[in-house]
Length: 152
Picture 1 (cartoon, rainbow, N blue to C red):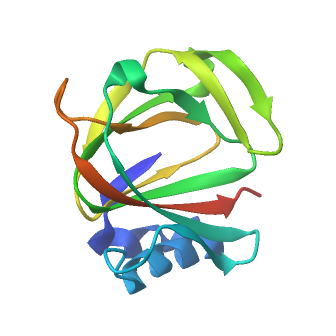
Picture 2: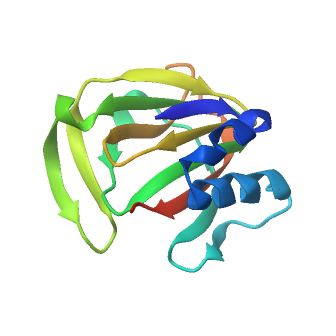
């Protein structure tokens, strides 16, 4: 897992051409002006989902992981906490869905705060719980972009 500010994205070009393209896409677009939805960057190999939502409490969050895709999660506006843990520290709660490329898990993890212009690269072994409020009962509005990068 990597957590950094978009201004430092050039440090991660060695992660391969697909990650480089994903980070370049994030740098080149103003997501405050882009509507929610799915946007192809390189067919099924790299695509982005733009979404607006309110954060939720940890009690309403779910631990998730993916097998086919690496997530590059970017906060375009707002602040949220994201939970993370290694998949070996979790147990399966809901079986893997091949169609949706997601499985839900249970266990414990740590959290980091992702503010505006923060991105996180989450690999298949990185279980995560996105969209969590900074304060127990206080929701905040977030504009997030999740770029899906096909894992090789």
